Structure formats: C-alpha cells, structure tokens
Length: 322
Ligand SMILES: Nc1ncnc2c1ncn2[C@@H]1O[C@H](COP(=O)(O)OP(=O)(O)OP(=O)(O)O)[C@@H](O)[C@H]1O
Image (cartoon, rainbow, N blue to C red; front, side, top):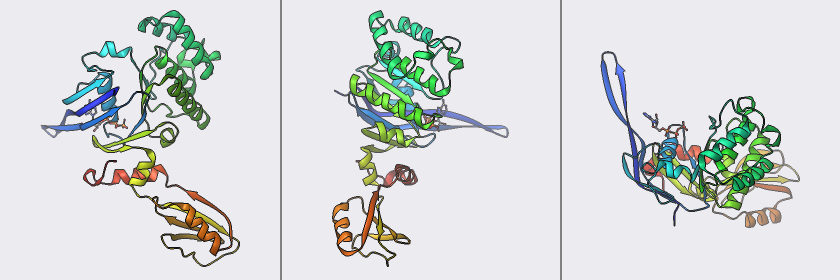
C-alpha cells in the first residue's frame, strides 16, 4: 500500500499588489492538480525550478498547509487533520535552516527530541550510537549548534530527523552549501539508512548529483504541474537527448561515416559522434573498430542538467509523462 497519496491536489494563494492607489488581487496556483503516490522505502527526487511548487507540496504533506482542493493521505491519515500524530512518523530536514536548538550542545538537542517524541530510552541510545558513528558526530556532541560548521550542522540535523525512527523523511536541499566530500558522505549515509531501515524519502534538491546518487524515481514539477514521473534513465530517454561516442583514432581522419551517427566535433585524431539514446553503442563500436584505426573510445550520457533545462523549456502541454 502506498505510504503517500495525493489525489488531484491543488493549492492556491491570493497575492495582493498595490499599483499606485489601486490594490489588485491575483490568484497564484502554487500546486495545480497533482496526483501521485509513493511506495514504502522509495526514494523520490522531487525537482523543479524556483517557484515550481516543491515547498508548497512538502508543506501540505507535513500538514502545515491545507490543500485548496483534492485529497492527501500520508501514512494512512490526512496530514492537516492529524499533524501532531503524523509528526511522530515523519522526519524533516531543511538545508536552509536548522531544526536544532541554536544555543544548546548537539547532545542536549538530541535529548530534548527524545523527550518530545517519547522515544524509549534504550532505542534512543541505540539510534544515537548508530548515527554518531555513521555521521562522525562523536567530537561534536558537546559543541553548541551555533558553533558548528554548515556540514557539521547538517549532519546533526539529519541525525535529529531520524532519531525517532520516522517512516517517512522529507529532505529539502540537504546538501546545499556543502563541499564535495561532505556531500558524498551525506549521500552515502542516506543511501545506507534508506536501505537498512526502508525509510521512504522525498528529496527536493537543485543538485542533480543528489538525484543520481539516491533516487530510484524522479518527479519534475513546473508551475505547479507534474511534467515528469519516472526513472532517471526514462527522463533521459524521454527527452531524446543524444549520447556521445568519443573516438580516438591513430591519426587525424576525415569525419567517420556510420549511419545513425553524426560527427559533431573533430579535434585532431579525436572525433565526437552523437547517436540516439535508443541505439545500442555496441554495434557502432564494432563497426568503428572494423573500419577505422581505433585507439580508444568512451561513451558519454547527456548531462541530467541539460535534460532538465530542456524539460523546463518545454510548455507543459507538450510533455509526455512516462
Ligand atoms: N504563502 C504564500 N503566499 C503567496 N504565494 C506563495 C506562498 N507560498 C508560495 N507562494 C507562491 O507559490 C509558488 C510556488 O512556491 P514554492 O515555494 O512552493 O516553490 P518551490 O518550488 O519550493 O521554489 P524554490 O525552489 O524557490 O524553493 C511561487 O509562485 C510562490 O511565490
């Protein structure tokens, strides 16, 4: 059974603007007729440009905002009517702001959370020991949150969101502002806890490497509409962005002519050939090896950034969901 279900969910805001003496009111549809469900243990990347409606969706899923129309069920209940009950079953991490107590040492923040959520002491100790080890928090437990670096604070925030054994975790830009090593560490940790604890994760991020590393499914929204729901590979294929074969020949050579490929660049003995995502590279490679003095080659996939940029540039009506 799905752990998260949205049925024709919309959320509108009325925005008023003063122009001269006149005040005009306008309705903004932050989320427009969204229907989707998420299965237990799934990690879904939820992406879209600024103002697409991601935060509004997450706020409705936590019960902070009530939909204007449509129905939501999270862990079997309506979030806005069962906000406190649901709070025990979900964890939330906002990369842009901490949920920890600014002046308290990290360990005291964790102790407050244990009381707040009524986590049995033994279970709290067990979880704390696991997260301290996996997130390398040992030396930070006595440090006030305000004195932690961004990466340290984020590790603390993630531990805090997981200490009460939530079934569902919403991660809003968890790697924002972190260096490459901290990002990689955090992604490895999230992948491990998802696997070991079967936690359902909705991840909003502008860092598409987070999606590549963690998400089995990706949903793209734009102007409140769902524009894609499927796998990352499916997203690549749906936009039919070509793959590139980079071929190193023994010497400079006129453009390679193989049906179904196009030479887009020649750089001395190196040639770049594009071919459709739907075509297998193997026969092309075999043909090049047979007909040309091949030294080396590699295949590059279209970058996910280029695919997403293309997707956002397409009007919603022109996009086919998978
Ligand atoms: N409380 C509010 N009052 C009026 N308009 C709002 C409110 N909250 C959101 N909006 C509008 O709804 C739209 C969606 O906003 P939302 O914050 O959900 O987008 P987002 O995808 O999370 O963007 P970002 O990536 O910038 O965080 C935007 O046009 C925003 O201005």
